[in-house]
Length: 396
Image 1 (cartoon, rainbow, N blue to C red):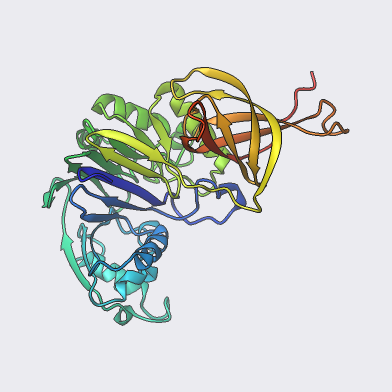
Image 2: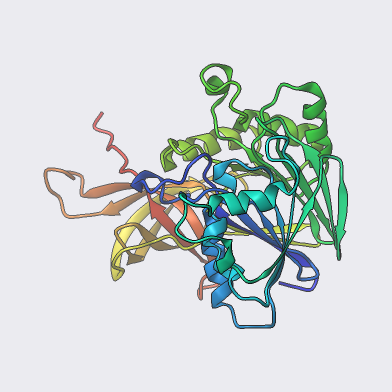
């Protein structure tokens, strides 16, 4: 990161409850938690779902540079946004310092967030209590419409439409603007207008897209969530630059999220589906996106001829012959002249011995782009993909 860069990392992107299904491993199953490192190095933690445990482990593995300090912004008190708090290991060392901000719940009263942490760890729900945590913890109650300055970062809050209340956060930095507006159901005119004010001109707009438009109209109405289609409406009205679909439903498989992202990009090109390990960096209002390398399993070098079909960063269709030199059961590393877009789909036709299953000598596969970087060959790019379901061969 340069001095004027800001970095946003996604540690948990799933809504309602964590998942461990094989069908959700690519986007991730941890509940909401993001880390934002501002231009002056100040750290912000957005929500404390189960992704917080992994962030805490990362902090504990970092070389010690003195006490760890962070501002913790909590949108609301539903389980999926607080259930990582008891498992955040940086709470233990006494030199660390965390300053929490959230609203006073009419159901919890004064010191709502402090009481949330204590109650989660109370008998008989947890084996130990908060006395195991020795760090300094401060709690400040805020409300929609408040503005707070933290060094070079200004944080603006707005109320969202969610059962029992929820806050949206706008973080303004010299590098750009990030808006975090999860757990919101459209349909209340005043709050819909406030959401568009919050998102105005944002470089990154993180939006609740848990349900499909059909679900929101029928079975899930009143649950306090939104859709990819409403996200497009907000970014267009507000002039935001990049839409990040967030708070994926626990019953949405990776294939389901892929389909939602595909529908979104057909109407709004600068769209992304939040995934664990995804890093978005703002540098003087220019944005870069890096996905985690999620290929797993035994890795083997090889020499497999393949035909790749996909779309470039500019939306241009391409077909290219290449060699797969690095292959696992879950993914592959390709070397391409074209630069496919991150999170776009590639069709891979890999050569194979002719048999009953593959009479044409090809194995059809479908992959999703998670990594791109220049190769040693200046005319090619190294492209990392993870494989999804097998493409049914065309037998017509």
